Length: 209
Image (tube, rainbow, N blue to C red):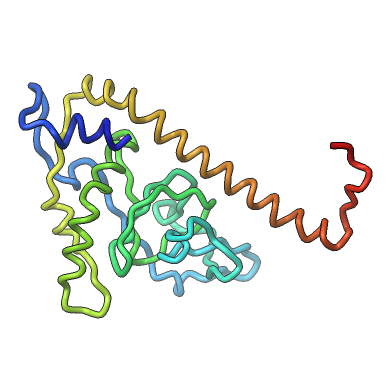
């Protein structure tokens, strides 16, 4: 995936007609999360996990994850396949595959009218530079600012070339996401069934293998 991206967008010194230079903010919207301690589940609501840096790093929510109301503005809800960018503290960019949750502050939900592979890889391409910018901040927790997104250069192809390149990259990204979702599903089954097997609640002694 990176090899194809580099071939078309990083390595060339010149670009075809119809291609132009833009900014990250030209190809994607970066929505900052909420201070979720202000949006706890109300009486009668079944809370959903809060997506923080810890959850993004480990790729799933767990029993220690905080809960928030499920009735948030949809732009602050995160679902499988959403691109998430932690812009403060531990900077990282990833595609979330851990189920529905609420977007906490210090995280961007990245959305766009462009194909996912395009804005995901361009955001990821600039991550190392963002990490260096954050490290230079004279604060206890380094971060970037929205202006750093505006100053991040991207190459935008014409629509036909964008579609053509996407035919190479998009299936690879879809396969990666589908594999993560399947792994998470299998892990959930394991965590559900194993205690029952260990306690004897489920008996497999007569199952033929």
